[in-house]
Amino acid sequence: MKGIKKLWIGLGLLALISPLGLLATNTAWGEWGSDELTKLLGYVPAGMVKFSDIWKAPFADYTIPQAGDKPGYIISALIGMGLIVIITWLLGHLLAQKAQKTRKQ
Amino acid sequence: MHIPDGYLSPSTCAVMYAASAPVWYWSAKKVSKTLTARMVPLLSIFAAFSFVVMMFNVPVPGGTTAHAVGGTLMAIILGPWAAAIGVSTALLVQAVFFGDGGILSYGANCFNMAIVLPFVGYFIYRLTSRGAAAGSGRHWLAIALGSYAGINAAALCAAIELGIQPLLFHTANGTPLYCPYNLSQTIPAMMIAHLTIAGIAEVIATEGVLAFTRHSIHLGLETNIKEEGVRA
Image (cartoon, rainbow over the protein chains, first blue to last red):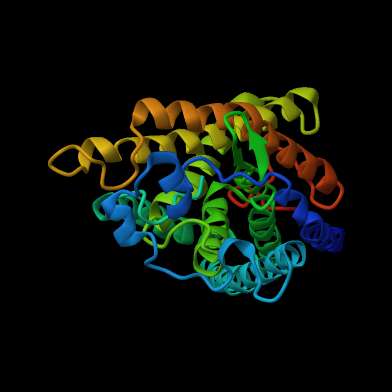
């Protein structure tokens, strides 16, 4: 597939410049953590206390242990894209195989 | 727009999973009829692009941030069904590995960003690009309108899901149990962020990537899996 290499390179470049996304330091509306909500409201709603920590993400907020903010963000971008490529590759080939079978029938 | 866990009641989360599940099923069915092995790298590339573009937070009025999603872009290139699968995958990795968006609220986040966004975006794009020559000014305008409408429709859905929480779920004395903001607060907050900056960011991301890829992938109104597929 001609030119597709250019797209992969583009993705790599986006990962490298991803720390630009850190310039806007505020949290997105409605995505505040418990500490921020305490500041905003003076309390954390009871249901939120119960469910907000139900899952502990290994690289929460795109941080990598031992890495600084910016390197951690770049590494997160690369890890995330790598995982997505693996998942969509497997899923895509599975679906494409099915499609081939359908066409042969 | 990634709703964290704790902002929606478990019952809301269940409803949103129930709303998204049939679309995932139909998407897999639709895509399994049309996807060719040659198109798989494009699915991977645009799902990965959606992931990374969401990391580019931009400041919005009101002191918060927002970001583009790249869902309409994917729908224009690969069709809305493939876009639903691609963006859902990006959201899954964000929730599980990076804590961006919750696990319980994953169904809701997929409904907003992986389903409503690409389908509304694609519908508006197809509607407004009818009869326009590929690469013409009107074609580019249709791409802009589609991507702008898609992200704003998604933001409105998120605002409604959040805003109904204090009405439906509160303690006996009226203290909210989950998202504490009602519709009159969530809708303006989400819509001001997305009608202004995030909507424009989505348009720039979509048009920028389409301009960048137009020589790699033959783009045009006919270019998606549903019809003749990507000719590259």
